[in-house]
Image (tube, rainbow, N blue to C red; front, side, top):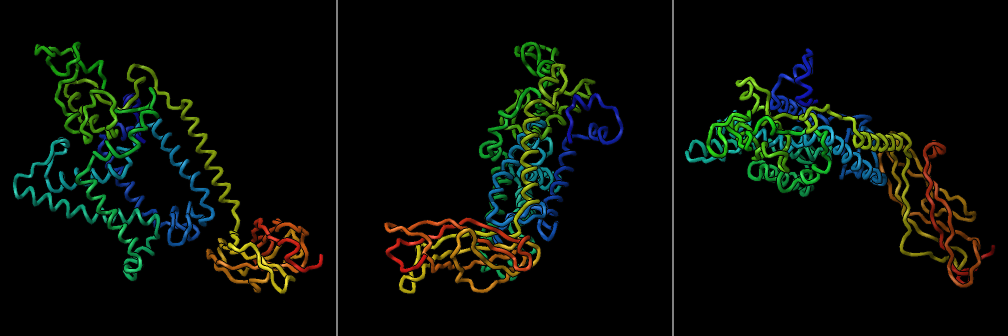
Length: 474
């Protein structure tokens, strides 16, 4: 966790806080990027109870969350999960400003990999402290290096694209389909290639303009900020001269050293978002804090405190940082409530899912009016960890008989079976001379070996025809 500079300055302790306070922000970011990358690559391969930690599988129509497999019939939980993610983002923004953009967003990580590591450190095409300077590529050697950079970066984006797909298709299935059955899954691999090409164009050409014009988070961040939210902020009171100028000369060109800002523009040149942090908080700022790192050595040589820091407006004018304010408690409460609901639903799930749909035919009268049939299509999903033999029965409406399926059927662990269900009756269930009648009853599906443990019940409707259509006895 990154702590505001005001807290760093007050901490002279040894250990983690001391190491953080003495390490430039860009180094902390790069190490954080490395840990995040390792986590993202390893996570799809981690399994709990045979299921991925998190995966929305389109091949098997199921959703894995912390080792629990949810069938598509249980996707009513998805809105709760999405709400949880968004509220967590709101909480993180209130506590750390737009830190996600500069410290956790894949767009920023890929851009840093391409610009700072491949183009700067590996190929020497640009200077780290001159991020905003466009590449001119006048020499053939520079053009070849630029092309080499693209050739190095492209395979990495194909790997990143595959990594994203592993949260929708299990890694072992992805590689098996890629090697053995690519022609049968053209959409999957077409999407993989298209996503990789998009990432390459986005990172190498569109760059930070994606953050400026496309990303919706930039538009909502200011609503989530308040005076206690830590942001990258320039100390205008200390930095500016009396007339608002920012150098050792005022607007009239006369010597003026009333402000600490030297006008070196180090914070401007290094900014990947191409903004001037001295003009205050701006929509394009991604809180990478490289402006803080750029200003620090300049001020250190002058024996002065950094003019740019990650802090809040209240701390800047002498108040204490108040992190535990009402909105933080509200967001935390919502996260706890939704997490509790998900935990409860995960621990109290049915081990058999039953879905019932009627066919388009209301009913069918057979045996010269002596028997009435209703037809249904049932989908059963065995989400237990073992295979079971299942059977169907009716409840709450005496006189009904299941004609099909006639015998119990096997469903393997995690498997699903679709069956045509025919329910008939030879009794006069209701007398209605004018029209057909809808009768409520229940369909019960159960495992024959554990009927009281593994079962599911669903309400259904049996349509009985008008009295003049049948020839039955009560």
